[in-house]
Amino acid sequence: MNKLFSWLDKAEKVVCGTGFVFLIAFVFLSAFLRFFRVSMSWNIDLAMLLLAWTAFLGADVAWRSGQIIGVDILTRTFPEKLQRLIELVVYLIILTALGFMFVYSLRLAWTERIARYQSMPIPYSLVILSLAVASLSMIFSTLQKIRRVSLQLFGKDASPDRRSPE
Image 1: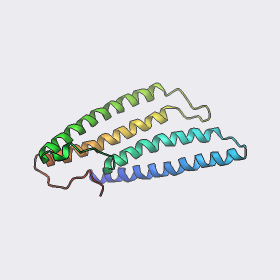
Image 2: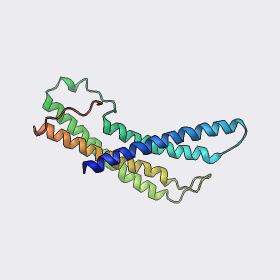
Image 3: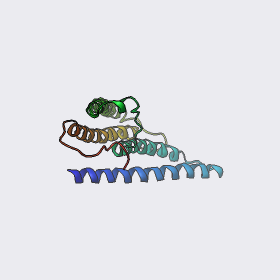
Image 4: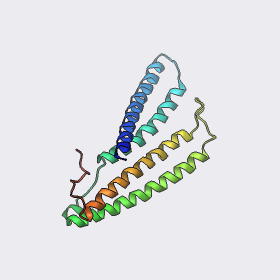
């Protein structure tokens, strides 16, 4: 199972990085060609599609690797067990929010399956599916974090804190 998550993590990073490179290339190409009065309207629409996918997948990469900013000014003075308990509650709230995002993004993607870009024969639901895919991936990442904190909270795991970057 860890090999599958490791492979998916690497694939997500590759897709996110490749999408970001193409996003920059499309925006630059569009600006460059506009200088010569060549209009490529599909270029901007494709860049917006890539922006949605790279932003949401990048959020999961940051979440999984502990790069999301956290404010612990209040909780750092609490005992270790209470800190872990609060962390567990926060992760459960995040898991619930991600579940809602996943369900409602699928519903919205289904609703928007007919609408298409004006410049490309691609449905809007492809953009909305980026939220569903990223939400599902973040749900798995959050479940791993919940498992780690639960093991630490109940004394079965003495592994170091994974919130900080490695």
